[in-house]
Length: 567
Image (cartoon, rainbow, N blue to C red; front, side):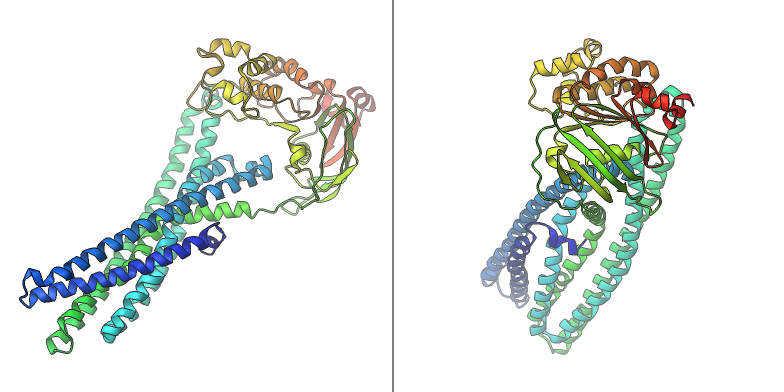
């Protein structure tokens, strides 16, 4: 992660500012030590307080200058860390939107939520501490030892010889600490993901009488996290103790040689005191780096994981394509499309040839793993084909991750996300400026009136986490209300009713059919009763389209669709 610091916007400016301030700070430290030693020597020689007046004043001024520089450096570091961490967070969120729901399913929603919410804070702490401490180590330590070298070469040699020993020991312990920290962060992500999934499925677990068994699983994962955390803390405490021990031994060695040479008369008291005062300052930057290393390990790990997301392969660049809103004359053609498997196995989709025109209701059916969701992701621009052509109203594109295309479609997944906001706030997700009248119309169209009548505050009642609990059907109706309010011309639905019982699904069906009017609809589902309402049915088997037609045509054909219906 250290080399990745250079990728952050404004890091060069920060290094210049911190370096300049640190040079001033280092000079103040040396001047402070010199003035303090002069004052002590004069008192030791029997001078009165008036003789040390100027030395005391200059000491105080150097002390104030030192800590003013420290405060200014901290302010600049905080500003940079805040800006850089937010910048990375926004880039990661933008990349996640491009990668789409497929990447979220693969990585785990809980992992991503933990990384964005807590990882950003830890990255901010890392960026706030590390640049400043590393510059202290690179500037103050050499300044001090160079000054000591001109006063007493032997003391400078002792300081220079002992310094690499501390560095080597820090590296060895740092590697052990990093290994432990990586394990801790991995277990923490598992815990967060498990906890998020448990919260989502809590109603189902309670319904099935399995909620108490889940307590034991959460306890087991929590215990693993506790053990990993304690292991990391052991290494951190050990390294801090060892660092302090070696530092004190090094300073003691310098003090012993200074004492012997003072007794022999080879060195005067003033220079000896100055060196002894500066010796802790010489080791202070490396001690700070060692101490803060453990505090920033999680930030390093979080930053590396965010960078891994940013390094995910982008879709191929393609020429900017102006795209008109979808209408009755618009068309979409998928020609010879192929989507390779990430595990180098058989293609997920192969030889896909199909065309759509105007406003149609397209049903996509097939057994689990046949490629229905992949086809939806392809049309949504969440997935890039390996080969083939995509033609939109006569214009050829290599993939559908096109802003003008994606602004026209609305995706409704199996489990629509409900934010911890009011009912109206959730419905306004795509249209934050929608009026109350427009929201109420969407509520009525989606069949949410019975729910609203139960809520004390109506559409201003808080739902989601910390608010009113909702059933699966009510969640889907909120997703439909968003769609009614947004009214985009293209709808993608991936198993939108798979989590609902048949009775609830039939209640929603009429509402959804109203939503489908005058739209291009792609509905991937294994609930085949929907197919009677579709204008065209695409039957997918093992990644290939094996049949296309209406319900009646495919029943008469008695092919794979007929087998799905009758099985």
